[in-house]
Figure 1 (cartoon, rainbow, N blue to C red):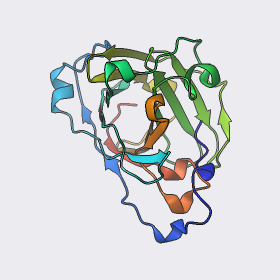
Figure 2: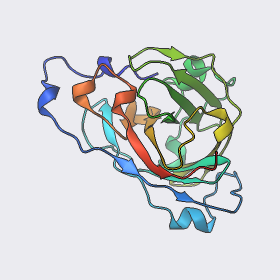
Figure 3: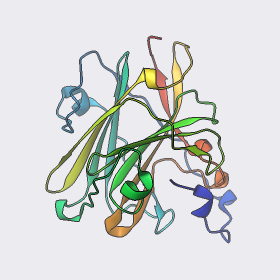
Figure 4: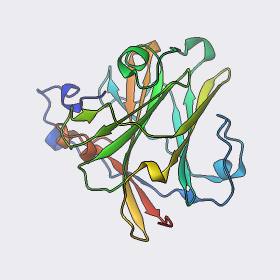
Length: 231
């Protein structure tokens, strides 16, 4: 897992760098989304895109060498993520392995994408959901804002699917709200971050980055805003 404090060279004064706060308002839907790795439902086509990722390795703060597009939807029971990852088919790194075996199946062994959610927006607890190019899943809990405070034994019931074509691969994720702990207020904002790794360039990307908080994890997050969940 990413330890942000290890990614930042100490000789650079990151306190002088400023990055915009990132937020995304997902569309609420009424119909069922089929989790098949194909984002062909009209809801996906009409959703706004997230594509402003930042490289954290090997070239910190550089532009990514591959495009990543994320869309988010939700209904009264689930939150959905549709992710399109630009990569030529022959350059994708696959790895079959066991559920939750991040060290052997994910880390530097395959291309993968992670969704992290601070559903209470308190900057003290977050849930991570990882999917690799072989559609192997892993999940975990970050139980404090400090780097390295990760509970890999936390597990949840959620679904994903992957499809691959000539120029990209696509992930579709469905996370039931019952797998998360969140408040019961009518209008909610959640912390949110995304991480992408692809082995071809040993490249890691992140969506929201706050260098001045380099020793933190959850404080780095952007936000999902104006979620209206029937509790």
